[in-house]
Image 1 (tube, rainbow, N blue to C red):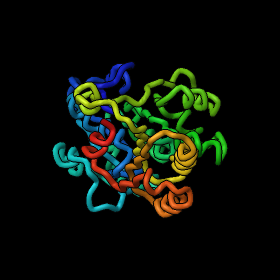
Image 2: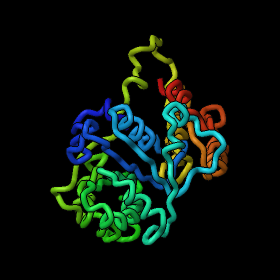
Image 3: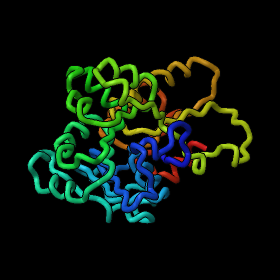
Length: 280
């Protein structure tokens, strides 16, 4: 999510009215994993803030174990030099005290589970504004484990960001105070994704693309069942899946079972540049 490309609330409003021009304005962005191939909204959140002039540190509890992540920004912005890892048992840890000593103006978490762990930092930074962006996974977890799992976040955090109208409704049902809920749909950086800039003739083939982790949360088997139905029509089609994950073997088996070998391509891990080319 790149602030420069967002429609809706100003990024400074999102960060509690704190602006980059204020002296030594510091933001901590906290995620479950960093770096990772997917969840580019975290990557672009950080680079967008840096572009706006904020001073940003990144915190994560782990990283995706890969040799290559496909994100040029990791090097061009020196993001790994801003990265700190946290223990899962954060309360009372040396790392928690070190976060407090950096005296952040804003602490912004991605994912509700992450915010629940960061609640331990709130008493140590009483002047900082604490925000969390809830994603689809958070809503699914609340359904599975019970709606009270984010109670402490709702009580302590200054702002709760929802990425879509459905999530907003569910967050209110789960007990999120109306006054702290902010609707901010995931944006598209039109500097990267600009179909009008490429002169292409209309395709005679239906092209369907999924960019996602190969994980049950993404419901790619459902898409394959839809592709199987197209075999009974005169439609010429091809389905491309860009992404990697533990579900690949299952998907390959379904492709063979459905007779889709000539109609589906699993590309595996792709760089952001490759994803852009696929989508455009």
